[in-house]
Image (cartoon, rainbow, N blue to C red; front, side, top):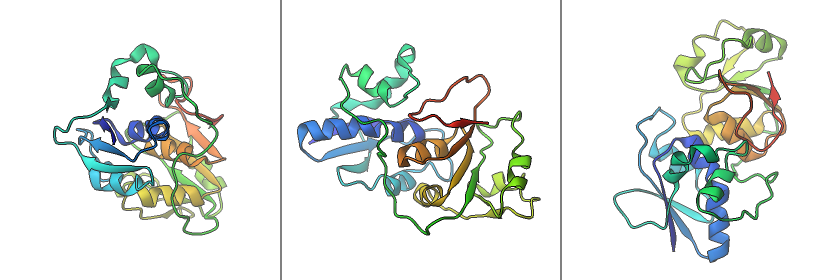
Length: 222
């Protein structure tokens, strides 16, 4: 059984899944992803939340406690010069493996809740972009929803047309994103989840200093 270890953030772990899936297919065996809890933990970024989101047919998720591993995914952070626009490619480059992966296929699956909930906003404080007027974007939408931490909603709750959708973990967040026709976000875990789901309408506010996004598709840059 092939094993992997990561102590990185939720977004980095999701970006590593095409690599994990590629190795699993080559070995034709079930694999284990060991997670060492990151120091950047939010109410979403917990082991339990990641375990629920990564309930996939080809990998089991367990806590890292010094087990022997085949691939240390944390090495991608030491390969700064290898960072590419397609962030998932970094894992293949670090381990000198040629990818066989259709970059336009979704690599994360969640069950839908409804057929559609229109527009969904996910605006985190950590990756805030104050040059983008989300207020104007919110007002232009008909009955949009907001997902994220309750404290993050405080800044936007004055919009009478905006409804807070209480998603208690990453899986529920992913369900809301999947159900949305339009997804507005900054460069946070919501963006990575939307890319992994193959969302067709991602409207992105880039973090300051960035000129592009580590993703797979041509997001609409706000």
